[in-house]
Figure 1 (tube, rainbow, N blue to C red):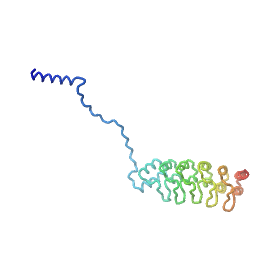
Figure 2 (cartoon, rainbow, N blue to C red):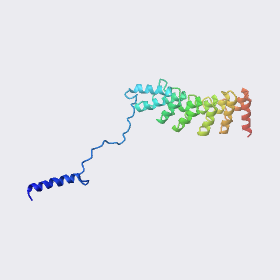
Figure 3 (cartoon, one colour):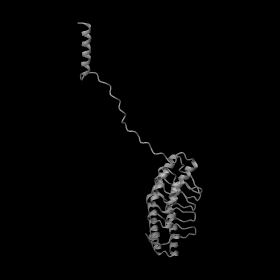
Figure 4 (cartoon, rainbow, N blue to C red):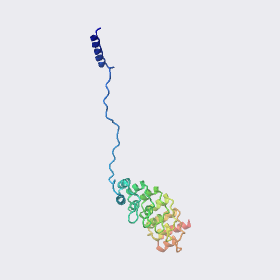
Length: 250
């Protein structure tokens, strides 16, 4: 066989192999990756602000009940325990105005429920003044000091009893171990304060009943030796006097 014929046969065999299914396979064209990518978070509008500005903005956010702004400001570096001119923290400002959204955001960040201002008020103590059960429920998981005293030496159940906050008194004595027989600086318990500073109407009658049901001692007298029953009689609060008399005979 001549060299020319042999060469022609090799070319033909090569062409035949290229046309068969088992012939060489070309490399696939690389495809772009389809793996999901994490969305880019929106920019924090407070990033880059100086510390004094961040802290001031946080106090303002707590005052206007802007929970989202509270969270963003804290993420940007604001101090959640910053103070205003009266040493009130953002949480205390939120509690004072019953701003639940801001308070929830601050509670989630671990704000201090016992931080005192220049009047010795704390977030927890102020719940007794406002009578907000919802706010107290926000703060209780933060483990507030139930023995912390206000400037009158009282704990939260005392101003609540004075002001006729029935729901708060009922909730706090049922859900905490607060001392219903705590005596403040004037020498008054919650029971005494409900009688001495209350109005004797249905709200205070309910509070007296609730306190007695949860261990309030009607024999505790004020600094002058006057009991709640004697105060009730002197003030003409006949219904409260009857409740206290029934307690003495039970």
